[in-house]
Image (cartoon, rainbow, N blue to C red; front, side, top):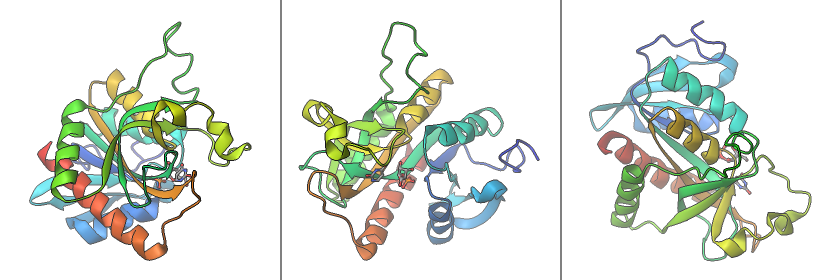
Length: 237
Ligand SMILES: O=P(O)(O)O[C@H]1O[C@H](CO)[C@@H](O)[C@H]1O
Ligand SMILES: O=c1cc[nH]c(=O)[nH]1
């Protein structure tokens, strides 16, 4: 075992890695999109694969749910496996009625309630940011594909079931926070700390303002659009 969470050998991952939360999404991405995909990790069933997209090497590794889980996989991908470009491909809940289900949200920045960022910068509130080059490329490519895309502030929360429902997000929707997921802030903070590039791309699957949800068929189609976009950015960025 190379790490407590990954039995791949150094060299088994490409420098560009897609990061879905869901291990079965990692498997689906590898089997559906990558050429010559081979499984490189199955520890805890947090599946990882390496293959190629448009002739260029790319890996996909499930990050699990939440920032502590993602931080483990991302730390090891950077330090043991040499990852340089990390692109989260996730789902998110809408906090703004202008973001419709199936829309793609590019997390330009990631606000967070997580102790994984809070308190680690002394008197400063660190602003976790996407790599600008990846963000710009993703925005351009999303528009060229005709996707409905938004770039802005994402909430990365440690809480999925907020006890106060939508009211629990307080002033954030009124300050332009577009959507909520659970990993981007940790990804961006680690990328900044270790000088690698990161971007979180999420498909909005359930609107917390209107209660609208994506149906199963639309979820698959939308995730396909997002994954193809992320793969293009991963190999061209
Ligand atoms: O669909 P994924 O990538 O797992 O992302 C979202 O879904 C999970 C919660 O259901 C959290 O991980 C959240 O960030
Ligand atoms: O974290 C998440 C992900 C999808 N939908 C939500 O409401 N929250």
